[in-house]
Length: 448
Image (tube, rainbow, N blue to C red):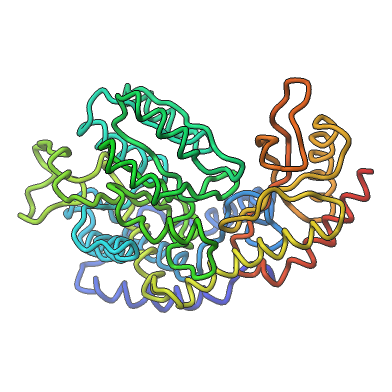
């Protein structure tokens, strides 16, 4: 059995308890009762959904896809019988309280007690809010991010009609501090994005040095920790990542995605602001939404309006089962992912068939097959990707700077190479490294 079905009995018992809380209501005939037709449609859907990679399985080691924890899936399903809307207390009384509590626990990971924050549809929306606030506070000034930062920052800056510039990276995929300082010296910068785990390589920008420059140049610092934020709990990080995560609480705003390492269904992002006073920037009037109580509504501090209360219920339940503490079960799962990436990197290097890039800072590893030229290596990467899938191993491909491999040099004007990329973000990956390497080696032999 690949998919969990044992937990369905738990959901049935929880649903009975939820239903009991509304037993005083008079009965009515629901509009949707054609269960026979419903089953027919769902069985057809089950057929359609089989046209997917096995994202839940350890042999899927490609993109950033991590299955929700069973408690998150069950809590989300339970809440969906009511379908609360956390835009206003009228639409999501209980789940609004759950959201505040769960978001407070996330903020506490970064050492924040007084803050402003909420859940949103994902990292893109969360970063939009963070940069919107930054633009309101520093109108007309340029936003900077590294060349390996997520492409959404450029798009968001365009939406906000703010200038955006990329800062070069070093050979480890981190923002080049010297290049950053040179750009700051020219002036006009309002905000810098520090990427705490790039989506391509998992590289962590050198936050302590960036904070030092903030003291000198006075910009706003936003930490995009959509991917890597939870690693603040991990205790097996190398020096740069350890130093940077130790000071993430000094950023002006932080974004983190519970639907990545936080074991949540899509879409669940979170944006946090160190200064609660930025809430004044959201001020607006509504003729009907916010007058059921004097208490602050989450919709009054969010650019989004309707937001699923089920996401808050799922996140709250997960964090109750797996508290966000160092040394806890949740933190140990993150540490296993990083250990798996380190073990995988060592194993494929020893296989003599591949060349890893730099040592992973989190749980992402990029590597290339041996080849005579950049063009040959790139072509072989794509063929290996396809052959691995044929062997039941699912990786990803990426286009990255040649300088990330000290063994490679640009040629014929080409300074990027197509590489293989694996995201070992499931705790189970640590026990599956040997099986992954065997299938990968078999694929490498097949394409020679």
